[in-house]
Length: 151
Length: 192
Image (cartoon, rainbow over all chains, first blue to last red):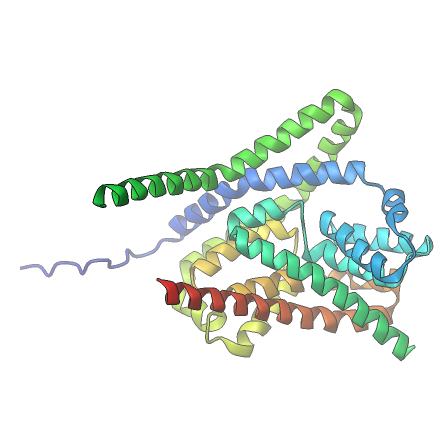
């Protein structure tokens, strides 16, 4: 008599099947990714550096929070954030605000939030982005304070 | 009493079913909403919308190589990586090794953040800690190829001071997310 296969025994894997599963997994995320790319297109068209510079007030803490908030809304290639940051510096915006802006540009994203919530979970996305926002303010304060001590 | 309980269960199940349905189609609703936003703005300002489409097209072309890389990673992970291995290096008992791995791969990862979400979900399903996912995502603020550019705009000293703080913030964020997660699990066990 043949020994019956144990229940739940795994089938031998094939690389083709692994690729199929990877394509399928990413394929389900495509509408979300396309939506995010289209939103980014809108953002990069409508929001200019001059507009961003006009939002800052000159008050240090408020500007840091504003920098963190604008960086959270914005997204895209980090090079863009450095260029905008450089322009903001020329406009006289404080380094606290610029640091918070370039850190949240990458670590927090409102535009990409729907994709993060759908794929990694709403709760995770809310907590991660909120913490990222607060930590960017702390990182910017710590960085500029350290620079002041060192220089 | 039993009839009431059954009715409550049915209502509860219906609500859950609707929520599942919403969750399942959430990405499509989001995509359709963005298309509607484009159509709406097109009626006011067609030139800017053409420009937005051009910018989006360029962005999409830029992410194609990263998408292919992610597919390759996902397939290789599926083929070679057993959930036990992921648990060992990135799971509950991974310790400093886990943090080091998550932060260093976050620093080395390329392309936009949203392209990495499916891969991270895959890894979490195989046992990766949520805190390490958060640390990976935060440490992406350090882009090694872009450091010279950052130094050009803000000075080399700025870069030297900022980078360790970003690493510390990655760990802090990851630890807080782990703490919140473990508290939630404790409460679920307590009240179940």
